Length: 445
Image 1 (cartoon, one colour):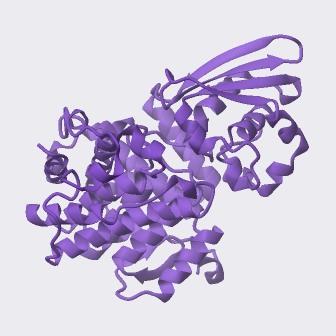
Image 2 (cartoon, rainbow, N blue to C red):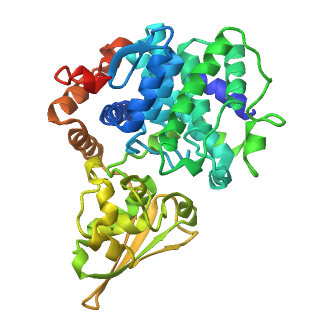
Image 3 (cartoon, rainbow, N blue to C red):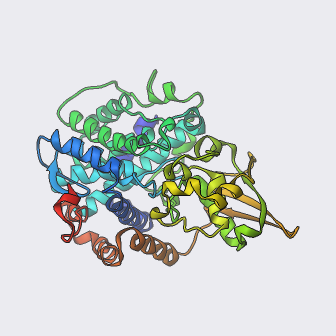
């Protein structure tokens, strides 16, 4: 089977065949996605893109974060994808090498609202879309990401198409057309990292998925296989690729999506293992002579900004984040990452004594630190994010993260509400995107 055949088959997986464990992770991702979108709704880029789309609105069918105004589904997917990635605090999948929820859930919810779907159907469409994005990400391989493509937007667009197409109830022929159409639409570059262009990539993914599925539903035709066929997306966007291994043990037998990682630090996921290792060390920054961080070389193109100029760039700076972790600065709070960080003398001073080295034997989720203290002692600690924590710890971490981003009352209301997903409609889900009634209209629009 070709990749597109696998994608078509994946899009048709019956709901009853989806394992409860995978569905639970998809539910957690829904909670995480909504919290990140709500928390990012008043960022400058959020206001810009929301205002632009509201002014350009036509058919009013879907909801966006931070406003009760409804806009077309494709536009809502663009806005919500961008806004929910504004804080760069959403989930990551290291097989996909990208963020699944921000590029796919916005497409699923927008179409779900349009067709008046059940919330559980939106969740299931997302799960299949996320799995599709992960599998296509694996087909494209590491080289695609290393070349400079942002797989949240490229592979993610195929996942968004699967999710939107499932909710539109596309036929097999229409799903084929939709996937081939999005192959000529999918885009997104890592050169945007550290700017508003990075979250925009997530919006592009969701928007492209809705657009491709909507056009295919209306009879728009495309290449027979724009994904893995001659001059298709894979062939033109990856120097080496594998159409076989990534599809071994496919759903419903196995959902690799279950390996999703959730951010508990408000910075690039490629720095989290380092931060956790430094936290284990329990040292004071004033006692540190130097820090050596070891990571896989591929991360150097992502989060190795040596002299960050803004709080946003700090999120992609091993050296500055290492200094913050050593001094016990709270990296879990989005409020921490202000421009003042780059002028903090003690952080800048320690950052100059942080060295980043690489080791190709390390995987994407593993990093180690060697801390040399002024006393002459040294400590060496290694951390792997893929080591699973008990579910109750993960859930507690996400709830605590939500409280920090949204406040206790709103966070608990969202947690309790999402727990009742089997009873909810798309319209019910959309209500969680609204700001609390206590907020003034001027802050919402």
